[in-house]
Image (cartoon, rainbow, N blue to C red; front, side, top):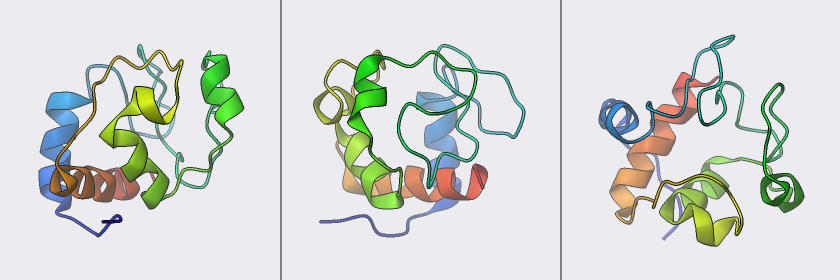
Length: 108
C-alpha cells in the first residue's frame, strides 16, 4: 500500500515523541543529532546544507517525496543501509501516513 494523506495533527504528535529529540523542522533552525528537515521534500538524500551525512545517505541519491519518505520511515536502516539514524521505524502504515503528511506541511 503506498502513501496516502493522513492526519497532520496526529503526525505532529508522532514527530514530537519519536523525532524531535534528533530533528528540527523550521527554516534556519539548527541541526541536532540529525539534520534540520526544512525543505527536505524535493531534495536529494544527503544534501542538506551544513550537516555531515554518512556516505550511505549521500550515495543513496533518492529524491525525498511523500512516497520515498513513507518507505524510508518504515525501516530506515533497511532503506539506506549504513545510515547513522538510530530510529527503528514506524511499522504501521497509518502512522507513516500521518507523519509524512505533517512533515510535508511543517517543512515547506
